[in-house]
Length: 154
Image (cartoon, rainbow, N blue to C red; front, side, top):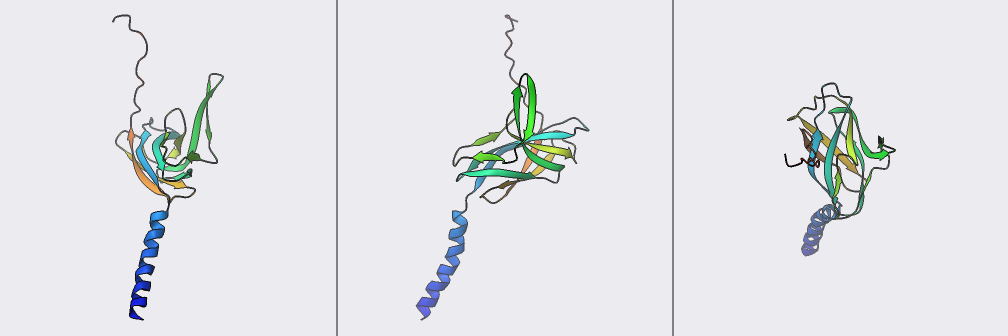
């Protein structure tokens, strides 16, 4: 009877760790937020997400703003349009998905902190299947696009 009880105890201890190992996960890298002028009504944040299984980013939360949303940006007829993605962003298994300037991104509406270089923004990302992930995104000045204008030998 004792070997049976010992086996049962070992099995009971092993099952939760097996269940935890089977949970899908999303790796978050390259998190940052764009610096914004004082008094700005909104600010953008960017991350790269890599899911271990097909998943979806469905929400973002932060205490650094009145609310945070997942947005997309597009150009139509020479006009830049931005809109909230109510269904979030698809995350195909194993494929990095970059939320970046000019495309899908995170939007802080009503920042409660100054989005100045050196500040930090805690973002909690919620997924359809994977557990939530909280990251700290530094505020940075956006990189300047490389100049493509010919300089005529100057």
